[in-house]
Image (tube, rainbow, N blue to C red):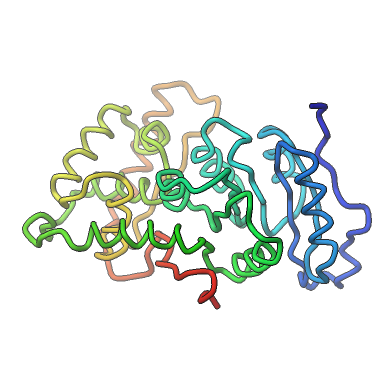
Length: 287
């Protein structure tokens, strides 16, 4: 397949909507040109949706997200062997962008991982055009979009976590370091990035997480994120930034330690809005 550079629609301009942001601006990232062409035709029939860029590789997708002002990125999971990490990184680099992931079919593990890492919508490649249009409008409005099967998977995972016996989910206080690491997890960070931010090693992060799992009675990162949502574990916890590039290892570690110390000094959990996405309903009931 030949490479098609990322591009911008020539008929889309800031003057057309008076700069009021009335359009849903979309980047299409898909390996198949025919799929992108089909979506462009679908969206061309809608008065409030404009395709502003397209890409067929992960590198092009990253460039498009950085170059074009867009509201939604439609991202095919097959663009990369690890779509979960790719989505997390795209959201980290473009926090205002909302990502709708197109999957080849029903996949419970992939759906839960994408949802946990911040995907705003997950649709199958066989999604009906009118449902995809509705999906875009919903996620731009701040909602989460899952098909009925995806909703059942997420709710079942939530029930499995919340229905554990009280003895297996003790109400405990995490240490400041544990709270900081858990906050990073709920924001979709991998152990490597967490280690850089808090000035430690990946193995130490793994050790901390094992202790946290035991303390809270959870089995994995998804259950940990759901527990934090339900019990306001990491509300208002400040996560330190990544060390500046070009800093040597010791200096970077020192900077990360200093940032972590500053963050943990004021990171006592309180009742406030959670950083984990809210529970969702089926697409038909989202409003």
